[in-house]
Length: 234
Image 1: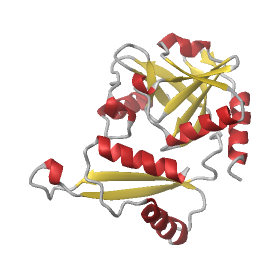
Image 2: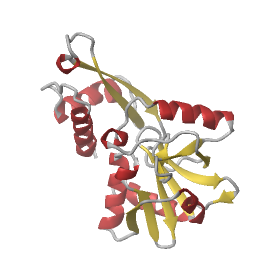
Image 3: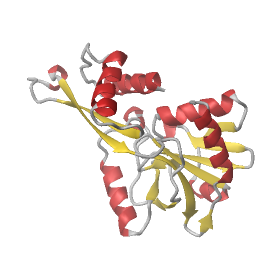
């Protein structure tokens, strides 16, 4: 998992045309988080949100150096589905793009607008659509829709995030023949046909979706799959 997160960070920096310091090796981050988070911070379970940004020291952007900032959110267990299920709804006033940069976590005005919209309407999150009116993701992360024996996930070309956490989960399901996971172009109303919905957020963790408008969803089967995934790390 640490290698997957590291390579995702490097690929994201390249897409954003950031100058990657030679010191940014996997060993550098292992030592950084071991000393600053585990030893000094005494954190046993948590999520590290790591931000890389350009400094204003370059004459032009392509010459700017980079710095980083990170924060740690303590949690009981990252791989546990959070106890409080979420209530979602679609937002149609705005949409998210489905180009190369849409798949990585960057500053996103659409996320800010949608998060405020959710708060004002007593929702936990909202489902964001792409310009083709198909499901891309939520503000927090990616959505997995279980329908029968199939788990459908929006394609990255639809605007879904590249997610090391979700990719690791999907790999576990494929490797152990636990579910048939398929990438799809999912139109908005198809969410109502699902039996269960899981939200996987690299930033927040795992959540079951309880309600979208007047439709309620279960969570038993996804809970079993996540428990199996969790045991694979032990």
